Amino acid sequence: MNMDETILLNYLREECTDEENRMVEVWCEESPENRRQLEQLYYTLFVGDRIAAMDAVDTEESLKKFKASVREKEKRINRKVLSIRWRRYAGLAAAFLAGLIFTGGIVWGFLSNKLSDYTIATSEGQRAQTVLPDGTKIWLNASTKVIYRNSLWNSDRQVDLSGEAYFEVAHDKHAPFIVNSKQIKTCVLGTKFNVRAREDENRVVTTLFQGSVRVDSPTTGENGHLLKPGQTLEVNATTYQAELIEYSQPSDVLLWIKGKLHFERNSLQEIIATMEKVYDIHFVFEDEALKSERFTGEFSTDETPEDILNVLTQTNHFNYQKKGRTIHLKKK
Image (cartoon, rainbow, N blue to C red):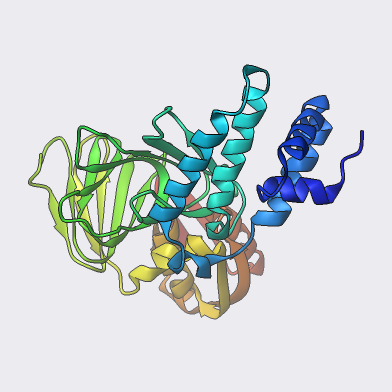
């Protein structure tokens, strides 16, 4: 049967009567196409670029109201419609964060009945922005997974990261914020920093923008490396050897948040400097004259360094050779 779109919109906004709720849930179970239609309507309604809402949202109060709503509605449902209702609650959790999402692909999962652990994930080519229950703002790059662990037995705020994410941590001197990546811990009280810990890279790269962080590894224990704003620390995930780097423009590390790299008659040296920070790779100029070559273009940060270089080399001015994490550039 066909369903009035007005009723579907009211359902997503939680403005339906009990009878209308039952109608929508029965209709949703009738076919996968109906479910896809409801999901598409949800994304059309809620998902968009609303970054300004980040500063206005009252995270704790909204989360309390949401949890109370879930508990109240769970009392009224029966086992027959439990699964479809649960999917609806998952959608409402995403709606709770909808004003914070600027690129599709966020997955918000509840991993326990106590709502103590949260999983936030993006797939390839997708980015997301959200707020954790403690008020910490987080931006996720593509192919990234974050698990926020809210233990009743530990005052620390523990986050497991696979991929790359930028954090603006809500200050709490009694509850340190710890990012775990490949047995390497980034420990903070309140600060702004980026952590890159991709599964296909044997390294963890932490860049600090504000405040202070300490990066611990199994070899340093809790006497790890202290970073100052503007510094980047790269730690090998096998040997735990650490290298401290200071970029002239550390903010370029966060260009992935915008999703675009725009060059307007920039020199190749400037372009390469940006790519080194965005992709955590190293370039070597075999010919110094190449540094002054100028290019104009726009690329997605989801493209690989090779994709960008393949376009730039169409000028016939240079070619490149990749060896591990190093790319050699030489004149043709």
